[in-house]
Length: 149
Image (cartoon, rainbow, N blue to C red; front, top):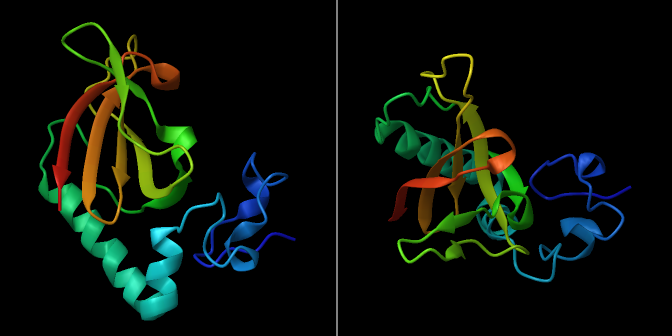
């Protein structure tokens, strides 16, 4: 059984056959140091909880129109949430590292009219916040906010 440091249910991850988990890999489940595992190892579960609550507070303080109040963030592998954003020159750019773990959530936009569903994707690293808006399965992504913390 794969064990995590942060409490994530690794058995539900589609990478569970390729990953040994962060307990066995000493906080490096995909070859890189996971900032969540490092935070918990150094500061403990209680400090991690305080850190996560602060991130949630920071997301909610952005006051993005149509974004519901955020109540939880989950550990997510970069490759699951690393969308390709269009640039003004017609290219696309990915901002995240596919092999890194981030804290994030997806919430449905409150302004959806029933015909076009849009979602907000929230991603936090140890030093940044990213909020994007996109359609079904990550289509037509747009960066709403990317900021250093």
